[in-house]
Image 1 (tube, rainbow, N blue to C red):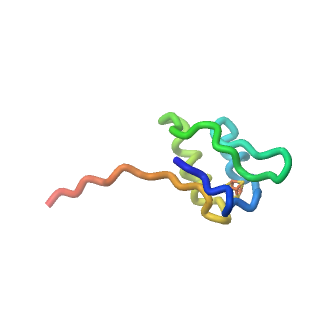
Image 2: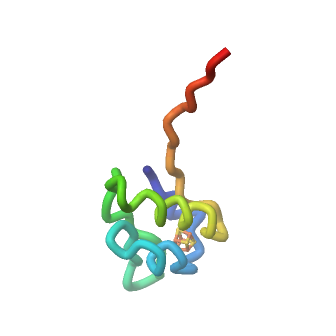
Image 3: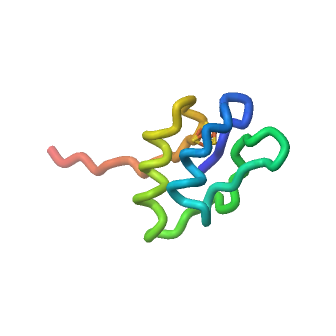
Length: 69
Ligand code: SF4
């Protein structure tokens, strides 16, 4: 997972949702990624943070889904 601090507007939604994974810069409030590879039990809240972030600054690559013909 990566965060784009240029896009981040410091809204802090991600920090509220999963403070063990996301932090905030003390000076300008931009996101600080504390855990680049969240644990399984953190992924649910991380995905919510991805959806909630107003500036789409959190990029969480999802594994490709398996297609069966
Ligand atoms: S929710 Fe998005 S805009 Fe807000 S601090 Fe987190 S990354 Fe930045």
